[in-house]
Amino acid sequence: MNILFITRSYSKNKGGKEIYNYNLVQALKKTNDVYAITSSGSFLNLVWFYPYSFVKTFYYLSTKKVDVVHFGDNFMLPGIYPLAKLFRKKISITLYGLELTYPSSVYQTIFVNPMKRGDYFISISKAVADVAVSKGIPREKIKVITPGMNPHEFDMKEGGGRAALRKKLEDKIGISLGNKKILLTSGRLVKRKGVEWFVSNVIPKISKDYVYLISGEGEEGENIRKSIEKNKLEERVFMLGRTSHELLKLLYNASDVFVMPNIHVEGDMEGFGIVIIEANSVGLPVVASKIEGIKDALKDKVTGLFAEEKNTDDFIRKIKEVEKLNKNKMIDYVNKTFDWNEIAKEFVEVWER
Image (cartoon, rainbow, N blue to C red; front, side, top):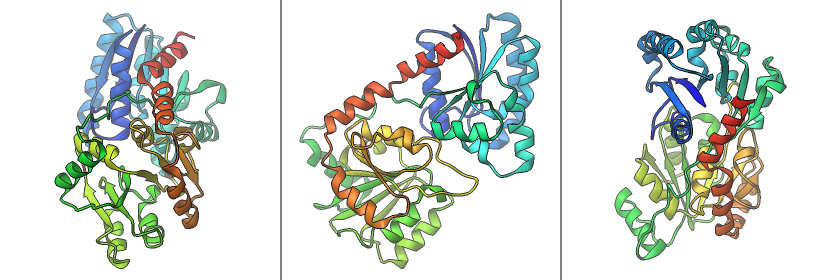
């Protein structure tokens, strides 16, 4: 199949949406001809990327055989949609959730309303599909296809096993972990991630056998720091800032439980939660709030346990229980369910229909 793939969110190792589009394109290229028009970076990049993508799209549509035009995000639709329709091409669009819920009437008018004219939509979770329907997109035009992962991408073969990995992690981050159990969170630090709530409500009450490592940065970072200081948790909670891909691999392999304590935030939502399946791919169990797109990323009692949103006692109980899960079954499940090569085939099946 010949696919024209357009997105301003594209990167090998930075940003959830960006990594999603990068991996999808790489998987599609294995069995299809893909013409990719991509960019990454700030919103300001649209100043040059819009005219560039318009010219490139015109070139591909007028000189190449193109079966479908797929938009990896909705930002490019207003400028490219008329051109794609001029050449009578079918259009599909990936839906992530945030682009549908962003509470700006100007944004909704410019970027969301034109999106409704697409021929088909790929939603990354059932929760996002429900939001799309509430925005006026017909359910029969939506197919839920979850994000994927590359099996074994986060594996680490270390002589000495887990003890050696923990020692390596201590050296990397400059923190003595002793015999503590490691709770880990990774991702952009925004309010919906619930990290500040977790620091304020769960860590002070959970056993002091646990330390909490926070990988990532974002606008909620200062509030998290204040919570650490207020609750005198400097010896138990550590903010690592933005981490490299290699350090993230080490964190996944050396930690005991991954936590995703998300909370509802008006105008924002968790579309899926790729970090969940990344953690699971090396046998790291997850405890997460049972809300929004997280429900499609975590298989309860197989890859982790759901906890009730903002329920301190439930999170503590589930954190203690989750390590009993069979790690081999967990790894096998995510490798079979979320392999990018199989995810790409689902996209092609939709386009062929």
